[in-house]
Picture 1 (cartoon, rainbow, N blue to C red):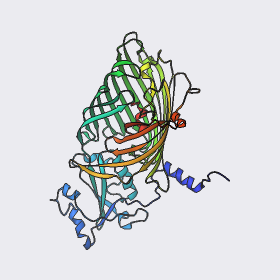
Picture 2 (cartoon, one colour):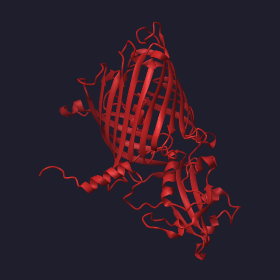
Picture 3 (spheres, rainbow, N blue to C red):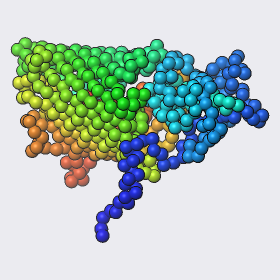
Picture 4 (cartoon, rainbow, N blue to C red):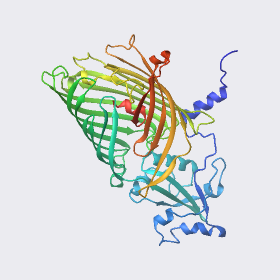
Length: 496
């Protein structure tokens, strides 16, 4: 019989692997075990703060004590049968201790669990505050001491912002970014961009409101630029608030169910009539929305396993006031599948973004709020403005190959890391102005490139794209683009 025969056991293993990311098919060393009860372990006691209280945290952090990796596939009675007597945090020069403590699963008075350590390490790395986290499990006669070693990334950083969007092309400018404002896991960005556009942007976000499992994102932006896709000069101000409340698995930002609340306000002034919905040249459009998010991912940044499903409904204008009057419904689905047994390096990623709007374009749906296709953040290989409409449907299939382990480096005495992935994929996109996508043209494009992963901005995408319509002509018509963040995130918030 011709074709592929899929072994049912292998298929089941792949399904379990994507639905339950904690399942592991290989031996992964996770912690360092130090036995202080033996005389030949005297060197380990050099980093014991009880016996060496005059040693600074920095010198302990730089200690070159030999390490023993625990094989998590077999039991270690010396550790698992003893309770945790103390937890110590080394290397926290800026981050508050309670920021770390609220993510921990291993608690003082409980028995140490290597499984809990892997979960809490993933949760701590999701905060995007550290380039690396290590754990020393120090065994004494009756209890164990957990020594967490943190390598903080730079908390405050003056930056030069360089960005390319499908609408404005390249722009750059100075800014200030803090991934850990006041050591409280609050991300602050104050950015400016000039060139293709003149923009001033401010954002404040955090995965917690004090001790409540509510993630907030407060965003404000002013734009003064020529909109080449819609052919008018735009002067606009936008304010946006997004709240995500975690219900199930609230200790992780990548697991469980979340409710979503959205509120934003857009004020836009154009230099000519016919662009805005109001009689004058300015529109003031309020929006309110809500939704649900379910996810089961192994990590928030550099995801390799799991599923994420987000559904939202948003009302624009109408009873809220303003010239617009339409509903917007969104389905955002993302899946990450490691190719077993090579899952450490080979990843398949699939994303499906469907955004449907009611109303009539130009009457109660503003022309400047159309979706545009073409460019690094929507349809690679095509020029910006290839097609536009009030609704859109974008599909993406991507294969990623991890090029070696992360490269940990020191920049200005601050630790960070870089990781590299080679990618190849296909985009399929469609926009329409009527009430249905049926009968409208679909666009296909292929791409390949290199992704650079680093803290703060997640990834830098260097990609060569080619439109499928040229393939039959044996003409690849390659375009080179640079994008920031994972494309499924950039397209979701219309960074075009």
